[in-house]
Length: 335
Image (cartoon, rainbow, N blue to C red; front, side, top):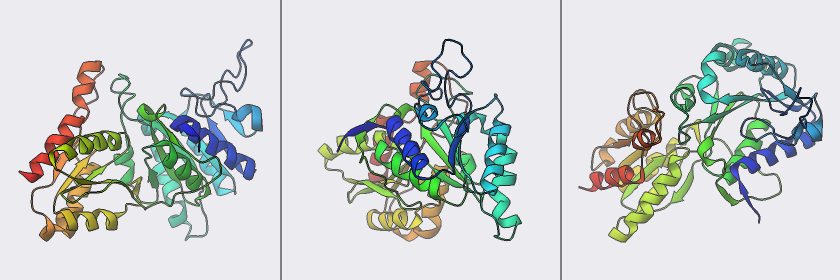
């Protein structure tokens, strides 16, 4: 089985889905790449991170559509196309720009099925490059999936590795509801073994990255790798942990989390988003309300401070959860 980066795995999923189903198309700013440049090779780049590279050459301008810089137009067009039977995959370059198209996502796409009595469906996927680690400052470093998880009617996906990214993307494209697909941009170059053939990973089924008896650790996106590094380092001290990657925050695999917490009696939740109204608080609340009598120690939340992401590489490194901070939180539950 070949190793592929997350970027290549998502690109392969898009190629395969578009080859299998003529109703699938991609739309967004520069998804073709070099379009309109007299010296450019149209379709060579494929988005600011290269994820849609080659789609224009394979499927042409009618299925790989470059748009003006208007997130509301991109998502509005995708919503309308989905209502009439197409399966659009829209790209918003950075998750931070979700505010520009919030009405189209929250008040339109997320409510179509409910407002029309279940008679309509909106099988649209919106892709976002999310999260920190690039020194891209406050307007290009937010995760935003914690915000979107709070809105009903939307499915929210956060892959942590290339294998999951391909399977979750193919599942997202096949889904009949709107799916927000947050790709941690710090992981685009991370590689693992990924099958060449098509496969899907069901939404709402968490992955167990590590298994242990002492502490349950739940982590999202790029924090999964950092949590795994912390857990591996603590094994030398005789500490073993369950590491759960929910993969999707909506739907959330509550059963897997609660079952593990009931077994270990301790919980650490790790996310790069700020703490207020975030996923760490949400899962801490879940444990407090449904597994309180199993808890042997207070739940530890490891997340970013309640402030914008700093530009300085040194400050951003201090801002984001680190392996050391995660290790300290695990030890605190055992103190």
